[in-house]
Amino acid sequence: MTHLTLAQVETLARAAHQGQTDKAGRPYAEHLAAVARGVRVRGGDAEQIAAAWLHDSVEDDALSEEWLEAAALSARTKAVVRALTKRPGEPPEAYARRILTTPGALLVKEADLAHNADPRRLAVLDEPTRKRLTEKYARMRALLGLEQGPEPEPARR
Image (cartoon, rainbow, N blue to C red; front, side, top):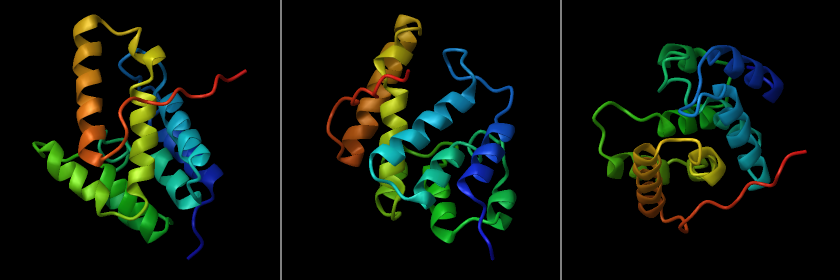
């Protein structure tokens, strides 16, 4: 089976999340692009970059698990997307364990956390939300054994 190209995956992910915004009111596709860029900068391969574009698609009901199962994607890309899909009521420890035991998933989650915890993104949120999310992201980084604090993303011009 021929797999979707990264350009096709990006187009698909952007369409699936069309009209969705992040907590700061920005188009959700900006987060997906930042995570894909973060994976690329960290040395991730094409399968991980594809997973970065799709990492929230099933969790956010933008695409179904049935779609993912049938999609022209590698088994590894599908496994990473599934690993990063939080399940209702799932304890953070179980989520972290699944990420740690799925080859390729940790790098994608690290890029996701780095963008989520970017001080520039958090700065536009109200104080209680900013504090709650900062603690949540720090806890997940600790559970995953990642060094504390997000690294700043290079400025885009």
